[in-house]
Length: 586
Image (cartoon, rainbow, N blue to C red; front, side, top):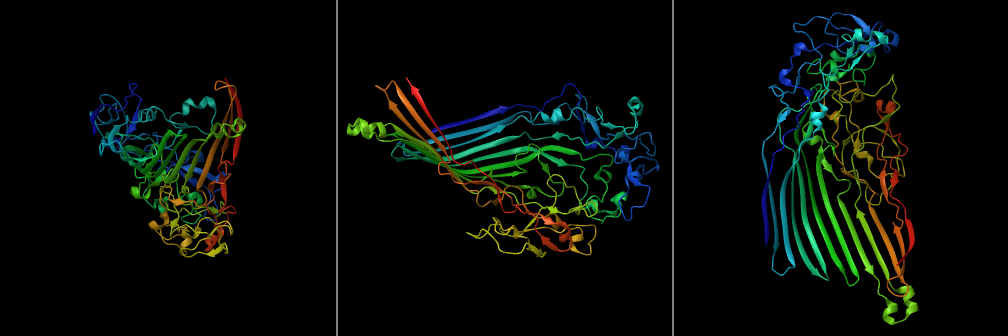
């Protein structure tokens, strides 16, 4: 038995910016009395039956009623306009990182000064005969947190503001600096005590000699990423707030109450006034990888070697491999934390090299050897199960400016919080079923959905049901809103969860080689023929599984699928390719 035990100590603090131009938003420093108000959109004519004409659009100060160019709609009213007990500023809550600032140190956040990372490894010859071995190990590893945090937060307000001047001349720009348009700032930040990102790696393996120079291995392997960076929205609008009549845009008053574009910009009714979509990055994310790994190998003896490697794996993560994934402001991790199969759970690879028997030499018949001797066959055969894909999204055709789509959730739509399909069952078609003879026009009912282009079904699209949109109060029909219900968000999970039929791969790449010796072993002609995908299998790698529907008909309660390519494969792996060569070697 061999046993290794150890510990490594890490001392790595966050990056410091000694130029002192890193600024972040700090909640404890935010004073809502300093927040500047926004210019509201306005119109000089009625919008009861149509949108406000461009010539009549204006921006209005909601306190003084002063009017200005519509282009300034959504920007901060200059601080020179009074109305507050405290002097307004365009960046309430922003702090500068310095060595003496108790609210924001140079490191921005703090971590444990010294971190121990343990290692453990064991190799055990179970029976002492060199034929059975158990190997296991575990290790902790810590990573220096991204320097992007310090870099990305330099050049923020108050050092730099993006100001916009409209309808002026270049020579007037300096005099307009105090009245130029500034949109609410949207800085990010990381403050307080934080964990250090790290990984835990481990494995447990059994090795067994099975004869014929062959070793069999079976292992469980895992990798856990802890304390990954995670972005949080700290100024997201409350759920369904975009439906609130108090937040309607007066320029489009003619539209239905939960129509997309009906509400004002979210900046008008965020919880922290005067600020935009603030974000906060902490180290609370995680992901896990677990796999069964089996291998068989034979070293090159008796003119033959081969190897086999099989992996059955699963990764659980939030939002795939994004460096700073965004956490939902409304839901727990369960909505966006799911399997990522990268891109399939089962992978098998076989490799081999075989030198054919030299019949000419054995039979001492040289002309036969010119044909049969010194041949080598080698290759790699790969197989993987069907690719995994995410559930299709919601898509419509036929919407117009006078008949726009609904605002489905009335909530913050970024960060994976847009509406998703409702998945009602298994999308896999019965074995051998490749088409569905039916009408593509169906009356909407629970569980009913157009099932693709007849003759081209690869998934049972009927299990993907469009959720009805939410609204402030229930509308006359479900298509016009079902009130404030979580069902409008849908329930489709995150990650790659649906096997895509027909994308299983079975591919063989083979090389044939022969050596022609010329007067001994020192000079020879080498022939080589390489054949990729030698059996020329058609192997699909993607398909169109995203249905789209007629928006006007859906509003009337009729479901008509409009994607003519639904159920069709869209790409494939390479066909058979061959190349041959001759080389004179001396």
